[in-house]
Image (cartoon, rainbow, N blue to C red):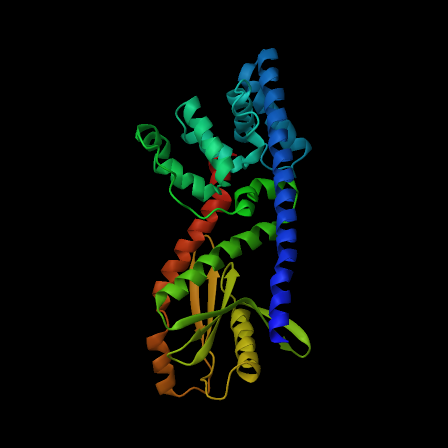
Length: 340
């Protein structure tokens, strides 16, 4: 019976593949429409500048018009419009690039235009990004390492540095979210996800005593479902370690929430031979990072001391949280600030 169930589970993975493939196709279609829109806007602006007696200055007037007439539309300020015109004028006569422009994200186009020194280099990176489905960070790594120059100088034509590719992360950038006019919570969700993914890896690397149990770990209280961001088990302390990430400044109610989770874990999940759970609250914002531990009041001073010795130091976690926050903000905002 168990073997039959296991066999069925393997077959069920096909469903996940179908869903993920459909999402990938949808994202590619949205990205293609977004890039085509920027191309058409760029073409319109290019011709308008030629026809206008004001030349390039007419783009400033267009930006002011959009700002006053449709303030809810993002990304069409002066700098953004100039980039769209540059995009069109850069590739309008490039037969090699034309079939590829819709296959990479707008963020990646901005990176390539800003960091490439020649037509050949631009063509090279567009083809590479399209083939490897590079995210912004993956492409930036190749650009910063001067891979094009190294490739041209190498008689063996070396392969690019291996980086994990993810077609969803390569397409689903801030510009796609804005194009779809999705609410701010989508951007914040991606921001949180970026921090959590890196935080999980950091905790696992901190010491061999941490074992990962689950992300968005579900617990039930009073028939209602609640989800813990990350749940670990510490083998030295023999206890569960739930971690909650909050975006924004620390609030007293965060302590109440983590204590609520600790009680539920100790009542329903913790085994009789295990110690009380210890919670960790991380608050990330642009300006600060806060780290707080939540311990059971019933713990003995000796057990509290043991916990303190085995858990990551607050200052170490705080510094790491700041680093991860900066990286997530860089992915989500820096390209917009530089090129929008």
